[in-house]
Image 1 (cartoon, rainbow, N blue to C red):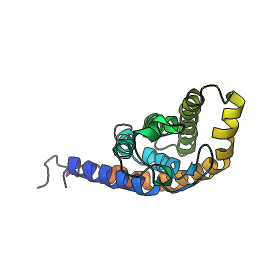
Image 2: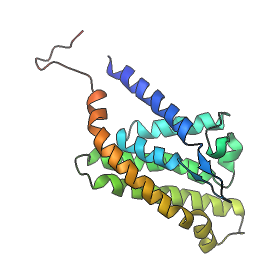
Image 3: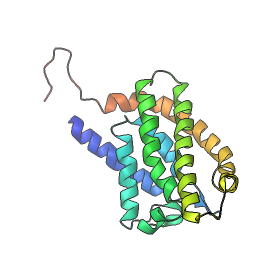
Image 4: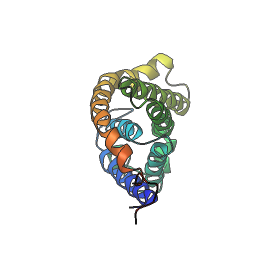
Length: 190
């Protein structure tokens, strides 16, 4: 199978997985607990920095166009413009950073959780900054941390542990499956 077709299929499958798994959430006010970050960790660890952000960006675009893929099966541009929009947009930057770090250091197993932690910092930073802006001064920095970061630390720690174990085992498989098979003599197989 052609390398481009493999990538298109992989992008489609993982965009669909993101769309199916990300909406699963525990409603909390003002920010729900979702499985979206777990999928961001996995996708970013399994794909290169050229592909992972694309998958996450497709997910965001589908949600903005009305597909109910955001937390609690919501959708629309209003969600992106709402209090949690910074977290969702932060997924894309997080995916870029995490996938870049892992792609450059994929044989170093310690890099997987480290990259995921740094990606989480990006998500928290974008999400908290947007949340404070959206709330227009109703939440100070400490209140924002208590609402948008502290309640999620244990869950994200568990997600990072699961995603690290899964992705370390699967990354080699993904790397070999997404490369075009070429015989050793240099001739392309039909």
